[in-house]
Length: 381
Image 1 (cartoon, rainbow, N blue to C red):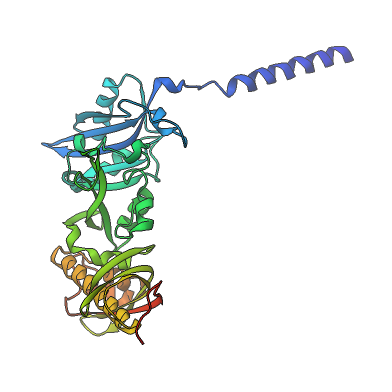
Image 2: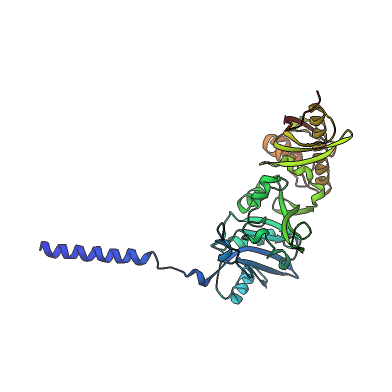
């Protein structure tokens, strides 16, 4: 009897071991049979969605230091269209020579023409099982056959680019705050928030390789939204002051004339606040404090002169950006959001209408720059 029970136990253990062994590979997929879309582009033309997908070769993703660059094309771009995004995706799958997967989708780029269909775009994308809230989101005005498949420097992996790693640039120049899907939707859904989406474009004049122009990504301009509705596009030249009010500012360099010379300043830290000034209509004081150090100086200047000149330069940029936003019906300083969060009674009575904007003369901008280091330069007393 004991031997029989032991035999049953052994058979059960063997069966369990077999099931555990095969369960781990039951859904195994050969990577060579799957095409992973790493970036998706969406356009809306003549009542149809145009869907673009970029795939990157594994040989370029897995490059290690010292490895010779792979020769030949390392990105592939597909295109399909349909009355809905899902129909367009199905059409794209039909022409792909592999199983098409969004498991490694890293970036979503929406053409300006499709921004007016934003709810449909987000709904269609988020119905995909594999879509994630960590993908980077951009707007664009460029055709996707030009935008996707851009060049890389040193023939590095395309993943080392503004399209896939925008944080690398933001740490060096905080002009444009990258938005992932989670941040984008949170801002769209928060009452009175002016969402600012970076515009992705290409630049083919800045860099060359052996006299051949390189087509490289850059962020240039923004699209604004309020209450999930697309509002307007604002060009790069109008929003230089946007960097000083970024919630995660990291670094920026500015240069300007001072006296008979010029200075170049590195701004390492910015703290900004909105102070309520009361009154009807409401008045606001936007206060900024900068930590700076000099990196270039022409002429002789005191620390106080440099601090005052820096403060005036930044003040002018913020004021210009604020006024440019008003012209485009956009509250770039988030003053309506400030009322919603901290003065809700006033917001309900006067600013709950989506068309509310602060007056051009209702905002006072104050900047205080503190010179922390003059580097190797000796300043006058």
